[in-house]
Length: 230
Image 1 (cartoon, rainbow, N blue to C red):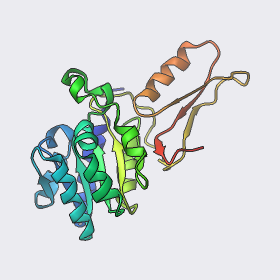
Image 2 (cartoon, helix red, strand yellow; image 1 turned 45 degrees about the horizontal axis):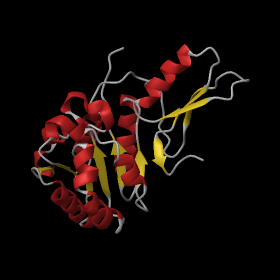
Image 3 (tube, rainbow, N blue to C red; image 1 turned 45 degrees about the vertical axis):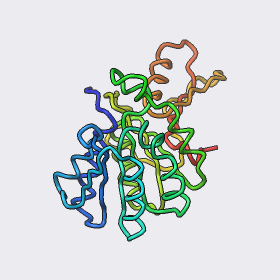
């Protein structure tokens, strides 16, 4: 099965949402081709705003649009979304609980050849500690597609972490995303005291480890980081 990046699911979901709902707007910061936010521009160019290399301004504009009644999706690389625009997300979006969905691509080490300056490993910790911010890290295309569609009609801010690189499919077309609920992918051996819990592309690594181990562990996909499924 071909590998597909979760950022591709973002573009596909956003394109469908914007075609169906004129209240949805999309913002990018000079990286629409990479984030796949450019897919929104294909169906509704008048509701897609490229804010240039000004991520803090993009988040503030997204907040203003949300305060005016729009559902705003704002996308750039995770490093710039959560690092460069942290203060705007914290104070202008989450503090007033505005309807902005921050969907950041190229997170973690999936950026690959873009280098260490773009490999954001701090984004989850930054976002999950802001009171009121909900954090989702989908593991594959199907999960990301459903997660984006889900957050569109949930009031208030979300952070969705997306990857650059293609990943193996974990969930088939019958999968149903349930916010806040971890998914047991493998029950494991009854006598095993090992559990492997992953999110995002680490879920695929947990499944590879499962195949390698003689004593089979439980494998859980913890796609929702905040709130965590206790």
